[in-house]
Image (cartoon, rainbow, N blue to C red; front, side):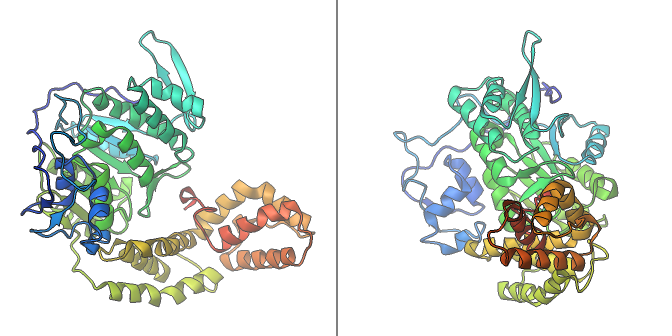
Length: 490
């Protein structure tokens, strides 16, 4: 259960602008896609999709709009009196306050929460539940119930406790049921906080997402992974809450980049400031609380600007990227041509292959040639001119590189712990001695995998135990695909 939400009075925000008259929207000075989407009750992505034919650059850089452009609203016209834009019920406005909801998936998150509370901040802490994918609720009569969120029945029984309309209840239940394992309990806690806004009340207008990241999700050691796509689905199911988030801080590595900032802004359309990282971020006990304290001070009240200079002379401060409504995106780096960044990534491929074969061992996952290759991949993914169609293949490279960096330290031991029985049965079915991958170097592990694959290819019919194991070894340990090696093993 989450802590009770503060009922302190906050000053009201100014009313939202009225919808524009019918016809295309002309971009004015100071406009962003996020502001235009907010005015017309739509999303950044919907505007991009409606205008990519006329302005192809929007597909790769949604922040590149120019004064004078004439943008088509989704559906082909602006909202009119006969076709009102979707909006919250009359009388409801998001409320600015200094409260924070802290969504932390690592144990160190409690240190961040304590630090914020010592500053006098009212923090609602969301953390791993006592039992994976379970949450216990208490009704007005004091009766408790435990909901199994990984089942349709349990997700729905929990969603019913939020006091939302039937259609919205069904949407929230669907998001919870189909979220990743061991993150549903945290998502349910977040839904409890957000339900306050959905019922017309107040929720914290500042939000922190804290954990590990490669730019796709936030995950914890031995805990689940919050995919940004899943967060977007919950925001779609609970739009008042999503509109109530005005200041966002990602205490997570590789959570920055202009493209990701646009994604966050599409999830939280009223966001005024965002703080994230283009590279590694400081840990909870190695600088994160310093960054959080400076962010907290800078985002008090109703602000529209955020300066990355706040992180100067701090650990990992050079990796801070910020976006704000008044100043746009800033990461402190001069823009590099896309072709140059592509060439840098390609130049690092021999390094990846060398470590993948095990010709060279990773001595320090946080530094060295393989880490630099991974950083170059991240720079490419964060480049505003990277075509969207190119992203999937580059994300595969990113996922393999980060897993290779932590292969010996984390991936192989967790693979062995999760699949020891399957490994034993698979090797035994081919008359081979089962290895303990947690004790093998990368080079030795690759030799074992190659020997198993060769034996499997020459065996017909292949025993079912070997069939089950083969993709775990080839797609998993060898190719390091995310489908077989989850983020939480990194």
